[in-house]
Length: 269
Image (cartoon, rainbow, N blue to C red; front, side, top):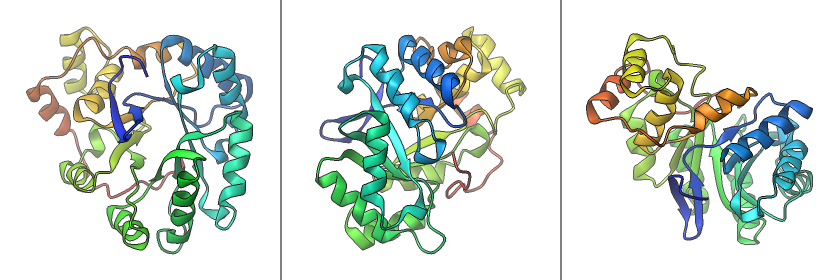
């Protein structure tokens, strides 16, 4: 995945720390945004069955001219597809035009329990080579443990809503102790980009507050998947590798948190 920082999900699976989110992007707008993102240097794309844009994402990857193994592709399984996991994954692979998916997530927990039976199907399909790594989204730590206890397999990723105002060092540590990668979506939705702390740090580095937020994720080792349909903002969100935040800046940004314990998100991103 080039020179971008990444986190290991397995012996030969590297997840870039900055990816491109596609929630609410559809049709031509989605295709153009993903093509621009790939041209700009993104090598990690995030989609889902319910986004209804896997076909556009896959077409953008093919038209980019990049080799399949140069682009990390994540998609997600709706929990109401219990018993139809294999068919759903096959439909995603066909829509994306790929032989395998790099990361497949249960999009959010089922209404009852953590979805242990679904999780065992994800394990099986990974073992059969349909996907390279598996995880979940919008899960609480206790639900991660439930899956691990039921299957012996810990989800490699938990994708939840995250940003400075949602920061919780205890939650980060709980994920790391379980060897679960924390991946944050919607990094700007919960962030006041006009906050004086963000503005001051951005000015110090000659960047935008949005870039500070992404860099904050990177310096904490948390995956960020910002989304935009605007070419200039797509470029800006990836242009975060020429500066870093010092310990004092990280502490000041962490202190923006208004949340004691995120546990897991509830949105459908």
